[in-house]
Each structure stands twice: as structure tokens, then as C-alpha cells.
Length: 120
Image 1 (cartoon, rainbow, N blue to C red):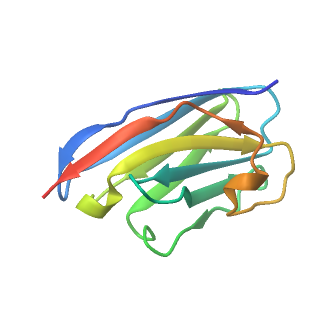
Image 2 (cartoon, one colour):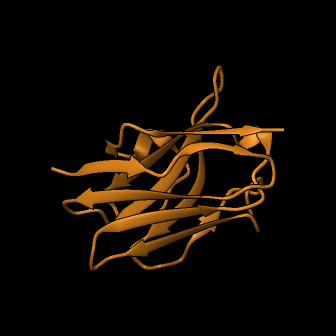
């Protein structure tokens, strides 16, 4: 059984930065960060399979950095140059398959989320 716990969200002004963390337990071959704004579908923002080949959504490239500490079972998301449209609940997700996917439906495990609010 995999358990995920996010932390690090908060309220910041446009242009600010945050670093999100996700503590994981269990077998997490492929991990990812998703976000969900009010009234919108959950969308993937960054993927980190165990192979290490990270991937980013076009909307966050150059601003978000996903990293992983396998020894400590921690997943991070460094968010820079925050924009109001980045506001939403950010979720850590994991799946047992080593293959990456942008589809939230293919992830077996989810954290409870951490809120990011960006004001202009």
C-alpha cells in the first residue's frame, strides 16, 4: 500500500516561489504532480518516473522543476515565477507502473493535496 503526504503550499504574490514536498511510502515507480483549479479538471504538471526522465506540461516549462530523493522517498516540486493561473490544489500521485502518463485515471495513489494560491 502506498501512502502520500504533500506539504509546502501557501499564498504568495505573482512572481513568487514555493517548494512543494511529497513524502511517500511503498513502491512508487512513477510519480507525478497534478493540480486542479476550481471548476476545472485535474491536470498533470510534472512527471518523474523512476528512470529519471522528467516531463513537464507546456504551461509550466521553465518555471516548475520536479525532483526526487529516492533514498528518502521524497518528491519535490519547485515552483518559480508563480502566476495567478497557477492557483489550485496540488496533488502528489503515484502508480506502480514505471511508464509515465499524463492521465490522472492511471494513477493508483493520491495524496490529500496542498493548496497554492497566487494573487496578482
